[in-house]
Length: 410
Ligand SMILES: *Cc1c(COP(=O)(O)O)cnc(C)c1O
Image (cartoon, rainbow, N blue to C red; front, side, top):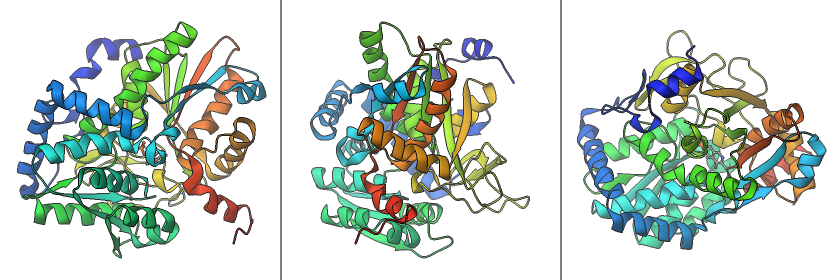
């Protein structure tokens, strides 16, 4: 393992990925021939757009007026007192329109679709949060929208399916495989191959083929940029540690990125430990995952010896995926980011604790970061500062939690 100091001195975060979309040994673009041109077009359009002041101005305007940025930096006073250690701050991505950080990326990409003159948008969704964000931006900009969702997820997240349909999206159930996120991504890619001329695929995490991991990360960098200046204003210094949950890895890369060069700031990603680290019972790719290629990129994947994708499990659908974003794989190998995991039972406990102590019901995904945050705050000194990225709100999860707690709502 390379030390933090030598790593950041050797490779600047801004220089990654390279021209081929690689973060060291990870990333790339492993796609069928038909998509090579589409990905190249997307790379070029994105490269031009991000240097175009008109695009940047419009992006910021919609992030403010439609999404509700900047989000607050919030001092979690009672949780801090409860832990008795480090001062805990939340970055409140849960306050964003449609309930999570996903809208940052959806707005950025829908503007690219319009720029490319593509009238049709497709997306995949697991828990439904990315589908809802995509449906919302497509409604706002008058684009046709189709969202692929595993049939099992559709049943679990019926409310989000209805939300998407209210906003005019067509939601297509996927009956293949495990009928969850991975299968929805396969369907979306199949659709894109067929309709690539008039269709843009809004991928929802820092995953997939280049330029998606880079582009999605960039759209979420606003989280870390804001947190940095808010923290400097509030405390006059940077936090000692930042914790975020990691599904594909977009909210985590977004909050981490602008701190990667600050060696005094420890960065921690939290994966889903599910029922515990046993085959098929979790989604912690760094706990037994192996290098492989899934859905466009090379990264750590939960797979068996034959390369078959393993079953995954997490109480939170948004973290329940067999592959992790390639940039995380890179920072895990360099040692710049430490990765932990939280299990379902801990998540259930801290979900209730945070609700009770702070009056904030976090998404089950975000609660994984809170589980690690509570552990770390207790170990840290009172003059230290811990920042937790609360990636989304838990409204979507209350039915599921009630059921798990044996509370009958209807
Ligand atoms: C989708 C989602 C996640 C996981 O996705 P990342 O790309 O890892 O950020 C985390 N939190 C919430 C609230 C989500 O909706």
